[in-house]
Image (cartoon, rainbow over all chains, first blue to last red; front, side, top):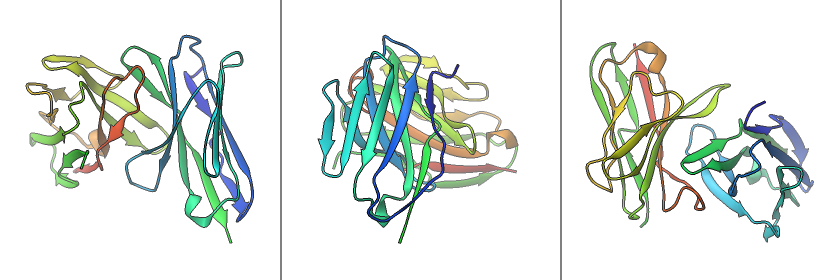
Length: 109
Length: 113
């Protein structure tokens, strides 16, 4: 089993749609969790950290479920500019950040 | 502006010709790391450094060297590049890798012919 797994997609949605991504992790001792956005051939950029209580930033909501060992990202009212690859990142131990393979999202007019 | 700076952005070289990719951060971060990204394989860690003079291997260290003589700099060295090292490379840093997010440089696209 991979340490961090994501549905690779692709997800093709119309503008205005709501889309959700999930990411599972294998190490129950993982301490910190993040969602990154990566545009083609560019560096990953932090979208949001994921906190135990869940957190929201505008149209984006992130949640953590420690019991089931997954994190989620919900995007409401999708925009064309949301088209990108979304990476979940989990700190599985002291020095070790693990990346999911990424979920590709395309928002269409 | 807080940032991680990598150079060069693009590099084409030939097999066996030593090269160095530089990485510098101005955020006083203790943790720095190098990754390579290949289609279908995602981001894989090459080397990381927890602090000055402390470096360790990641998942794919073969063919690479690093050094951390100063806190801000973490160069990646390819002593004898080979075509299988053709890839997109990212340097990243973090205040505390346990709890803080990684900040990435804008990448170096390396082609070895």
